[in-house]
Image 1 (cartoon, one colour):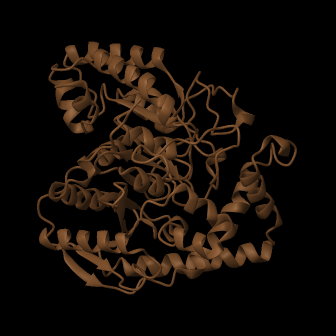
Image 2 (spheres, rainbow, N blue to C red):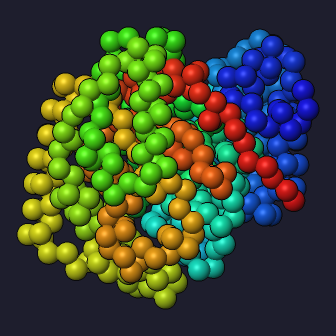
Length: 468
């Protein structure tokens, strides 16, 4: 197998080669580090590469695999982490120059679990400032590998770019208002936002405590399920982490979806959505129907308040998260994050309580909907593969911003799980995505449906053409 073919393998295929000793973890890691050195100067997906650590972990993996002591599906697999996950002895800046010299004294929970699973850490991935919407002015954003003129996504942009460009085999992202879903859609990868609390956030920079999710960004739903199975679960260091047992996310039948009820709202799913995205959702519905699923028309609860309330909710929580450095070091912040914190500090307590009450009511209505269906099929975003120029207009176009977040903010506010899947391409050759949503803790069903969809389609097997 050539190096170019190797870089595009999914984790399952790679693990088979590693665990049957047909491929050396050390040689693989060396090849990946060389590929990063050759290509990432243009892609800008990494904030920091960790070659010494990666090669040490690869050598350990090789020794254990030679002894047939295999730790699991990620043993020896090179991955990367969004640069807000604490890594012991390795700088963790969260996209903020103010934190460029911060070196954690411990690994975050997700990092320690990946280490115990034998994963090989290639490095830390670039992100927006503090995981909000904009990159700090001193940091050049990651570049969409399909087309440099197109958006590479929000805060987990480095994770989306690196995974899509074959610069890691999977990554972790975080999602507070769409930052797993948007970069997954923009870069043509699979992103799984778990139920809030399904994955511990201990040892991760906080953006908004009641909205933050950590989840996998991979090249297939199966890979995302494998990765989630490692990082999910209760954590005594994070009281918000759910106590529910972690299932085998790859155990479901991915060849036959008979009996699965998938809801489609013909109004919510199309109003304000461009034709390319609508077509991708319609095509996905046809695929699911052919796989045996029952497609049901539904009325999704009115998301207007959830969408409109998300900015204030997030802003207040962000202001709390930055109390130690803002406004004391305001001059070191970029204008986007600083302005957002200002908004949060100005929110009235009575207004915040009203937001919480509306949020609880909306979450209850969404939970009731999932009593009648198993999954909801919706767009990942209202615009198929927006350009950077289009995204730049959203700061002065409130209606455009609300259209963008209408399929992300509702499931941030409820904390429910979603799966973003590649679902087509634009005439310019850039990715179009679809999204599945489920009831709380129903990630296994999302992964099963995603695996079935990806058995029947090949959108996720398409890769960008990269040039130095």
